[in-house]
Amino acid sequence: MSKPKGFEKPVGVRDYLPRAVSKLRAIERNVLECMERWGYRQIMTPTMEYYDTVGVASSTSDQKLFKLLNNRGTTLVLRGDMTAPIARVVSSLLKEEVLPLRLSYHANVFRAIEEEAGREAEFFQTGLELVGDDSPEADAEVVALAIASLQAAGVRSFKIAMGHVGFLNGLFEEIIPGRAKEQEELKELLLKRDVVGYRAAIGGLDISRDHLSKLESILRLRGGKEICEQAEALSMEPQALSSISHLCKVWEVLEAYGVAEHVLIDLTMIGDFSYYTGMTFEGYAGEIGSPVCSGGRYDNLLQQFGRAVPATGFALKTNRIVDGIEGIQTPVKLPVLIRYDESGRKEAFQKAAELRSAGNTVVTRLIGGREPSGGEPMYEAVYTYKSGATAPGIL
Image 1 (cartoon, rainbow, N blue to C red):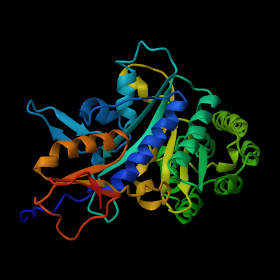
Image 2: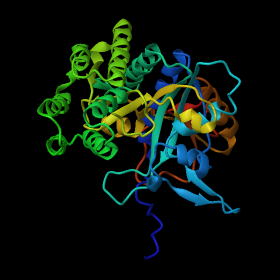
Image 3: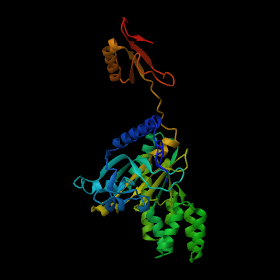
Image 4: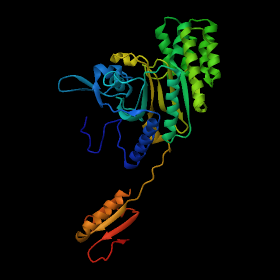
């Protein structure tokens, strides 16, 4: 392979120019302030973690982790998500704190990818974790706060699709008991939204016509609270019934929040992370087809770090909001220019400090020094301090 040119960068990473950074920071600030008003405290974790702990527990598949060796030969990873590192902290440094814990974050995460267009190896997430509460109230709080966070990020048109891992697990175990491989194949097809492939797969199963009809009907279980009643009539399996009951209670709490209009129940929704154990959801914006947020319940993850407590959370896919949604406007604020010669330097710098203290952006330039290349920029105002002038001028 030839040596990369000086201006090249690895596939999957990007440079953020000033305007994009302004929008990214505005989204980060607005969303974290929104989460703080709901009682969530911000946490920061290292970019690198041990592979044998956080790497193994991560939602990111092993093949997608960036792995490193330190000078002792220990395998490290660049964090593939934020949930596993926070689970490590909650199980160690925060183990004496009273539950439930409410934690928020904004961070870059890393996924090793093949060289495919549009796939990013480094991207930003803004999210939260609610640890120590397994109630429908906690799940509803997370969904309601995801809605508030999308609004704070400037996403105006969106819908939250909410499902429950336990419903599909129970239904599949009722219809094709003990056939784990086939159950996973069906879940994978639903995860990919491959309806044609799913129908072909269930058609190839050796099951009764009634069972085939049930597997087919879950593709239509998408809508409001009435979906709960339809699902309850579909299966008598205890796990499936318990899951639907939980989801119905979540919906009732969302109605009390006044946000149910943004939510629909979709019982084909299973989430793309293996550690999800209960309610899962994804948020879709009108402007783009891919999800702008995702989350769910993961009651078993903290056990891997020695603390068996339930948890739920979500993350905004901040890059997609920055790139694909008009949302927050970050107009360019013109700076004030202060020009000066050697005799007026002190007065010029005093004026610059005064204007900056008042919230203005100020740049200074020595008269006769380096001039801008490519044309004179636009300025809000221009002050000149030089010898012979009776007072600074605004030009």
